[in-house]
Length: 233
Length: 233
Image (cartoon, rainbow over all chains, first blue to last red):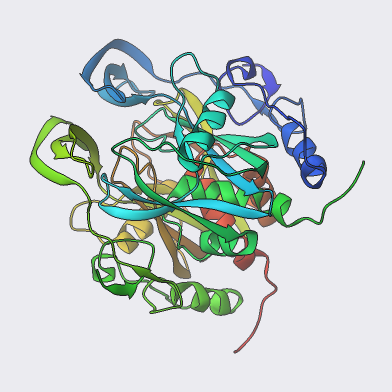
């Protein structure tokens, strides 16, 4: 066992897309610096590294579709019992909080077939093969709300459902967004709505936003969104 | 099309477990009233009801395991194209923010085989057949940290990954928790750690908590956790 900087994720930081800032808006500079310095910094949160306590005996893909697949592993649990572990393998995805040049948040009201429900969401989508998470964020912002951002800041990453699935969600804050013509796929049924920052945060805090990643993204950006604009350091 | 109270979810409120309060702690009474009144109340957020815009031609289970299954539907998209929609069907789950009688949060450091990573989490688990979400919350609190709550308050519900899965997460705030002996299953590898409220919230805000539902649950409880104690109405 050895000590290592704990960054909340077991993968090497180099495997994650680089945190990026492009033409940062002054109102978010201080905050983004604080947050962005966190994942890779050798900070005070040193944890004892603990290895994978399971033994994997075999591994095979047992079901697949174009969007995800199920891997089935035969394993030995830490206390020596034989068992089976199924893992839904899915590509990473991105969620983008889009703040327009007029200081409003572009939200989507979208029908989700999986849950037979209309959900309030922010632009989001999977990272395609060969794309970085940042490229996916730029693309989804353009496709879903026709948006082009003045600044894109990496907020953080999280597991959506780590009990069954390996999907990682990356959160971005896009500011200075100019809206244009969206390009929706045939299975995407959605309308775009502008909300004030306070309205959007209130929707997240009161449970009106049923999409967990959207609510989490807005709440993680809350302090940045409501801080007064600060010019310079 | 008709107008209906919008509560963020398409299912009838009667299908959800009743929001519950038992021996409420005075510090959370005002907040819980405000939050609990939201989901079912005919509030200002009236939305035009919009039906399922897809047509389902057929539906079959194409893969299954004891914890979830994949349903494959042949569909017609709203613009008339034929297609296939796969839905991971999984039982609802619960996440419980446990505040001890000493005002600390009982957190779990858990190995997650699906992502080969150690994650900071709060007690959580699936709702078993025949259980209500509240019963599952009581059981998971006891199993994972040996906890018995003085008060259990329903905070809200969210979809974990509505692009592929129908799983709903229910969030509870447990206060006045007395800790005891946990009962972990063989595939659960975890240790229990007490954190101050401020430390736990800071872990959520700075990305140290990689489990999305845990971070969301803590942030949704943030105002309740940091409000000064108020006695009486």
